[in-house]
Amino acid sequence: MSSGPAPRLRSGLAPAVFLDRDGTLIEDVGYLDRLDKIAWYPWTIDAVRALNRAGLPVVVVTNQAGVARGFFDETFVDETHRHLSAALAAGGARIDAYYYCPHHPDGKVEAYARRCDCRKPATGLVYRAARDLGLDPARSFVVGDTWLDVGLGRAVGARSILVRTGGGARWEARPQPTLTADAIVDNLAAAASWILTNLPSI
Image 1 (cartoon, rainbow, N blue to C red):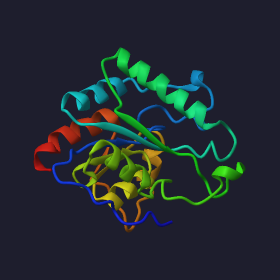
Image 2 (tube, rainbow, N blue to C red):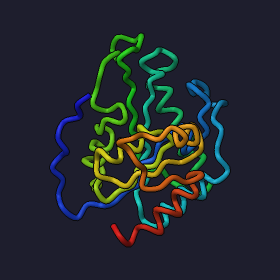
Image 3 (spheres, helix red, strand yellow):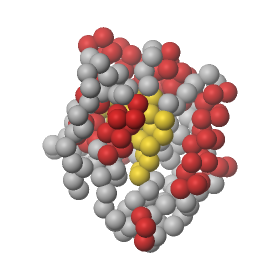
């Protein structure tokens, strides 16, 4: 799957934290097709708020193949993200933007059943966010619970952190011979701590 060349970005761009959603920001409950299935990790709001306070843009990048598979539509994905933002705001935390891929090559909904440049580990979501928000992927961090997220980080030149929540512990036990994370930590709180500790060196 080709995602094309990296975009030409102007100098002086900000580092950011790109977060996976299911299994990282919130619990992975399978295909999240109802708002009442959302389950928060107890540390999520504090972790995001700490990143906010450090001045780091926090951007969610998530594969949502349930759209292509016909389990829910894009309107529901947007509704879910508004719901997440409201809950975070109530705790003084903020996601700066959400980017998602609705595609899958084996999808049942024709409009979304295709290969694309945005399904992680392809780089389309990160580069789109970088253009929209003035971010520098190479000075940024990608946090997720699968090797797809680590691969995305490597592809855009960011530091990659694998969390053990969601499927992370399972993936940690299945190391990839050509792919390593910069850090493997228990959860998003530990990832935020690692990022803040390593900020001065980027």
